[in-house]
Image (cartoon, rainbow, N blue to C red):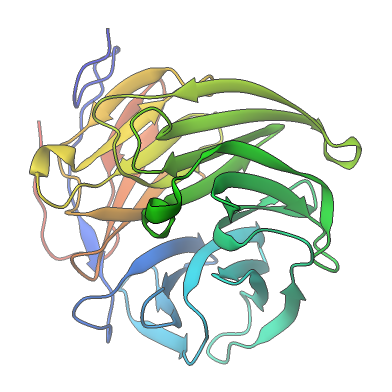
Length: 311
């Protein structure tokens, strides 16, 4: 049986360290993070900025501001490009190799998509977005060439009209699987939804799994590692017990609920080859974990000055 903070095979969290991002606002809203080429790319939704920091020391390398409307999410397309999606569906493609001078390399306008956009992920050469259309949480596949919707818009769950502004969703993908974490102010519909997309061009997909839990009432970010394990940030600003990460299998079965060392009000999460990066709405710190298998998770050093051991 999975327990809070401990996996079935005895995983522990140790060596808590973090990196502080330089020259950022006192209360940023980091709603997206990507780490590539020893650089941290974070998007500040409310302040409408993309910031690039050094991975080792958090030093600010470059920033882009004046973006409108609200920035919602970011994803890694490949080692040389990232995609940033705005609330109105505009997608900006950025090169990751041009620092210290960063420029947008492409600009996609989504055609025939959703009313409101929350998340984006690269998937088999195209992009998958999630958000709200006609009071329903949905997802669809976009052509990475022109922003055209490929196939149908797929419904996930209903969103009450008077709560749609408080709904949120985030998305990740691995192999044939697409995973979407939804919060719709309803315990019946809030959870993680998994879809098996066998052939995107033929629009064939299978609704595979759903994960719901009484302690998962406000999912704010989702990531998948190279083994297919899922990590879902959960944040509820009034009560510290809701500051946690749900660790799931690729079939959306609970492995553990991690509570130790989780930053206050966790938001975005990103996973690369052996590391997890978690942002907080409360500070400029990025918490970094190292992942080891079977099931071992440990905090890793990323230039931070303070350390706490959790045994």
